[in-house]
Image (cartoon, rainbow, N blue to C red; front, side):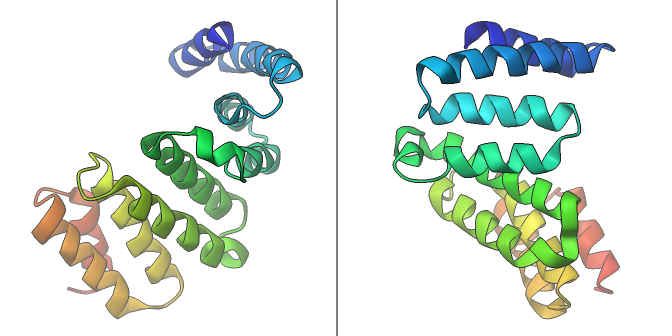
Length: 167
């Protein structure tokens, strides 16, 4: 698993992303042959698949990592990160069809991570975007305003969301 993490880090920081992602995927698959229920390996596998532009397969890996009983082995922060990652991919794959499911993931991530999460503003902005895409403009405005008032007063994303909504 450590080797897979190293390959994944290299894939994020080099120009030869695909080869490092393939190596990370191979290492993750090898680790899964030993511990098939380890959710962190499934998340690592999903990140490698994402870099290789295999979004649907990455979502399937995250579904395994976030299903019970595997999800119980994740820390709240790991679980929240995986939920947000899955939501973002669902929206990339088919925003119109998957926005409700993505919203559920983001709401759960916010609940799991708590008020002290350092990525709370990003999660809430993603929720605001989901509301916006569903045509729920008032809810979207409320979320973006809450980000600016209660979470991160300097959030560019929340300000841009309010601008898009005409506030």
